[in-house]
Amino acid sequence: MTVVTNFTADITLGESPLTVTFFDLTTGDIDSWLWSFGDGTFSSEQNPVHIFVGVEGQKFDVSLKAWKNDSIVNHAVSIVSSQIKAGFSRDTNALAFASFVIGAGTGGGWIAESNTPNAFIRLLVSPPSENFFYSAIRSNLSVTLPSSPSGLGPSVFLMEANNAPAFVIINHSGNIVSSIGGNLAASSDISKWFAFVDVTSSLGQTIGYRIEPVETLIPEHPPELFVFSGINGLTRVREFTTLSSDDFDEDLKPEFVEIGKPCVKLGWMMLSFVVSARAGGGFSLIVTTDNRARLVANYSLKEPVKEKTWAIKYGMKYRCNPEFDISGWLSLEQDEPGETLIHTFDMSLFPVSESLSVVMSGFQCGELSASLGPLMLIDTTIL
Image (cartoon, rainbow, N blue to C red; front, side, top):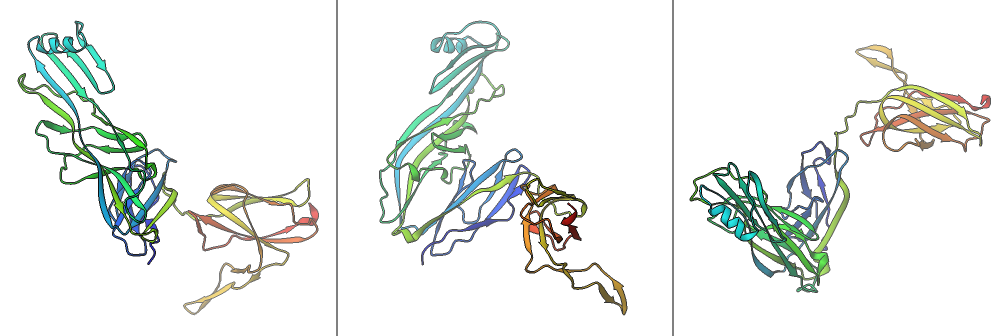
């Protein structure tokens, strides 16, 4: 059975941080998934939970690749290390160390600094009698990808990283970042590999990536003890192969998740409407409502049939709001985009020689309201 990828989510609009649960709806014989959340992070779970962080109005493209895996090929396994080393000394060793590398000045504060593509070293004297030195190592690496898939069908290529055990790493911090996107934060979990960028579309190219420590001021500790903070581990490119194109599919939903205030359906009521003649013929209709909505003007030359004006409850007859039959009527959406308080309708094509019946229906939060607005009878002959 051919794989057809599809997915949904429990929520797609909300304030930051927004927790979203995704649900795989893919059909076909599959055993592998790769989600891209549009913020540089990925997941290989079938139904992942992801937290989106952003500003109001920010939108995220979400995609899902699903496939029946045939084999796994590992490419370009590398050892990576990026560490911050810090220590205190009550003698001149720290100062001499910094002087040897970059040449140091005197006085308080940061008195020496070197910043190269692969390392930076700083020296802090505060007070001068207690020298604190701080150095860090960046790693800039690259990997050349295969020019074509290894299997008979499409392949998925992922760059992955694993935090290997390192007794000198006291605090796991920092990030792995590639030249084509992706960002993986350091983790103390050494039991699994983490995907940090999908490189399938970059076959045959050389991809650069760097291991970047986080600059943190490490608290004071005994002079004889060095403290390390950073990343120590392995990276690799892993290829997942398939037997045919029927075993793979991808679904991309642009702007699927948005950071913003959730839409609340409050109902809407017409407050006023104004009819005015247009210079080119016909007329304009402007409607004001108490709450935001997206209105549709349903109009006809005939007056709608009132289907129900009375109801019987508990043996008593009472008057109720009429329900209109507007089947077969023409309809026109408001000119303004989205859901608004003021709604303008361009009726320029309607001849100014008749009486027009208009009934409004409306949408809130993208869903059609269960009720209709009041009937408006517009005599265009007096315009």
